[in-house]
Length: 224
Length: 220
Image 1 (cartoon, rainbow over the protein chains, first blue to last red):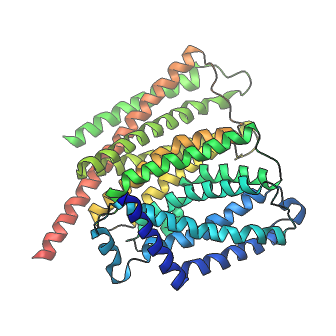
Image 2 (spheres, rainbow over the protein chains, first blue to last red; image 1 turned 60 degrees about the vertical axis):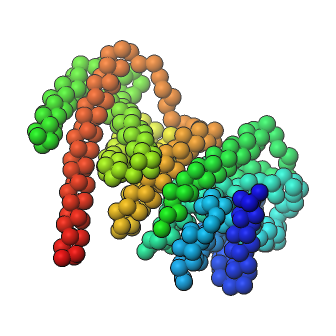
Image 3 (tube, rainbow over the protein chains, first blue to last red; image 1 turned 120 degrees about the horizontal axis):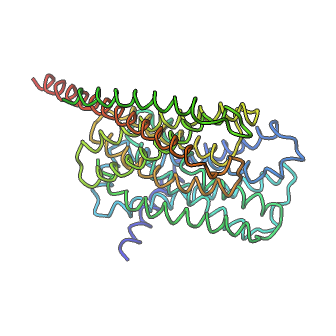
């Protein structure tokens, strides 16, 4: 029980810090709007709904990198990271807390991006709302678990901002693919069929594997 | 002693390549549909196998480094991964040359090609990551953790992309003489890989020695 309360303490601390400074979330919001705008020049309007899944997840992946970059980098001034590592809580609780906070922040960005996408591109996207929400949560969790882990890996590097996307994107390609397929299908308003259920299971499997791997390796990574 | 082994292996590889090239170019007949072009397969397929072998070794030694903390394993991981990336590039280049002649295109987003490209990106990222970290211990620790992530990711990428689409020629049944040419050339490439790894390992050891001396000089 102590583990979960420690996890939620870390998550609450991160969310509070972010909501007070708003340094990552504001950048992420405006960045995702900018990309959504830029896509209108890249594609003709009629074709957009067909590629909506891919388009939206590219937005989330790019905007998410901004949030993930700050996740551990925020702790660098005043040596907060050393204090956190020295604190009497397991590294896995620290990691999971940060991942949860990142998940909520990214979901907030997505909650804005979906309606904006619908308005900009005249798309009716709410046909399968709850399934879509589930896909968003699962896809984002895969992304945040890998992203938070690599954010911890790269926190002490000089080229942190450059390295993170370079490492995260190739690893999360399977997760992105599944999320893109499912989102594209669900935005079209069709329920999940057998083929899509395979992708759904795949996405869940990806989340489970990488969550387990990250929890197993986090003790090694978070040693300062 | 170590250099002698490299020279002996090198001579062996040279002889093997001459023998293999003779068999591939002169002994084996043209393939019915592809003509002479199919011969590139004798380098293309074994370089993938070699890269796969090397990356498996790198995944295992990265795990061993995290378990034991011995720098030896880190040196092996980086040497093996670097050589593997070279073989991945050989596999990709030969594949693209083949595709240009047979399919008429340099590149297509077929399952295997896409997975191959992702592998190059993953392990290229590993090598770039290593360059960015100065402290040897944290470099070893962080890159070992990343290597394990990449290693777990490769089969997942492989299966996911296969579900997505496929155009690559499926593994076919080969006549026994072609199989033997393929395996002989694989042997040559494996030996070549061992030579590269040995040379790279030596560089890594020397680098560690220079680092140690530099630190000593600073201390004085």
